[in-house]
Length: 428
Image: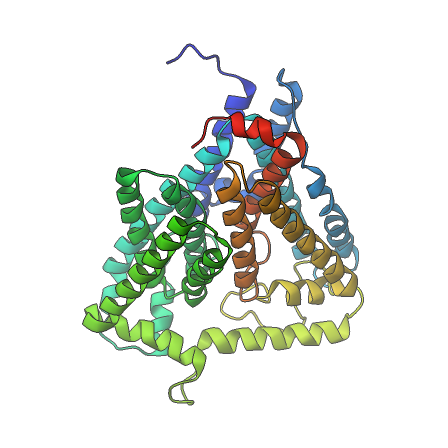
C-alpha cells in the first residue's frame, strides 16, 4: 500500500483535490483570507515549481486552447490604465489571471496524472454534500421560523439571507450544487453499479433539497435545461431512459412539496416562479427580476458613455448605487460590453466560440472511446453555464474554470493519442 513513492505529481494532485474540497467554504470568517480561490496564488507558484522540477515527462497537447484566452486576458489588464475604478479593476484582473493559471495547472495535472479527473469529480461531490447538509441544517434552524410570516417578498428576502459561508451567497452556492448534479454526479451515476447509484441518489436528494431551499430559480432551471439538452444529444437508449426517470423524480419531488406544503414552503416556491412570470398581482415586485432590470439599465448607460473601450474591468457605472451588495451586472456579455467595450466583447465572444468548437469537436472525435460520455456531459455543462451566465456570474467562477480544464484534457486525448491507444485502456 505504501510502497509507491511520493512524487511531485502526487503532491500536486493532493493540492488540487484539497482546493476543490475547500472551495465552497471560502467565505467562512476564520478562513476568508486563506481559502478564496484568488488567494491560491501560492498554489500556482508551488504547482509551477513541481511541474518544472518533475522528472516525469510533461505532456501538454491541447493547451493551445488556453492561448486563445490570452488576448482577452491582456486586454482586460490594459483596461486598468483607463478604468474609472482602477483599484477594483486591478483586483478583478488579478482574479482572472489566478483563475486562468489554476486552469492551466489543473489541465496539465489531469493530462499527466492518471484518473485525476475522476478524483476531482468525487471531491466536488463530497464537498458539495457537506455544504448542502450545513445549509439544510441552517435553514431548519433559522429559516423555518420565517415561514410563519407567509410568502411575501420581505420573508423571501429574509430566507435569501441564509448563507453558510459560500462566496457570493446562496445563488452561487445553489449554482455550484446544480453543477455538481449535472456534471460529476451525472457522469458517476451513468458509470456506476446499482449499489453506487443508490448512494449517489441519496446525495442528489440532499443537494436538490438544498437548491430548493435556496429559492434559486436559475439553478433549478439549469438542471432542467441540462437534462433536456443532454437527452436530445444522447444516442444511448439506457441514458435516455435514466434521464426520463430523473425528470419524473424531480417533478414528483416538487409536486409533493406543493401538495403537502410543509411549513408553508410550497407557497414560497410557487411565488418565486410566478412573480418572475408576472402571473400574479402586478403591484407585487420581484426583487430578483427588478434588480437585474435595474442593473442592465445602468450597464446600458455605461455602454453609451464608454462604447469603444468600456469603463474598465470590474468597474460599475459611476451613478450606480450598490444594489443589495451586488458588484456585477449579472450578465456576462452585457458585463464585458460595459467594462471592456466593443473590442473586449469581441475577444470574449471569440474565446467563447473557441470553447464550444473544441468541446463539440471532442464529442465527434471521442464518440467511440471511453471518453464519449464525459465529452457530452462537458459540452452540455458548458452550454448550461452560459445560460446561467446570462443571469449572474462574473466569469471568476470555479464552474467554468473546471469545465475549461476538462475541455483541454479531452482535446489532448484526441489530439495526442490515437483512437486505438485509447480503446486499449481499461474500460470504466
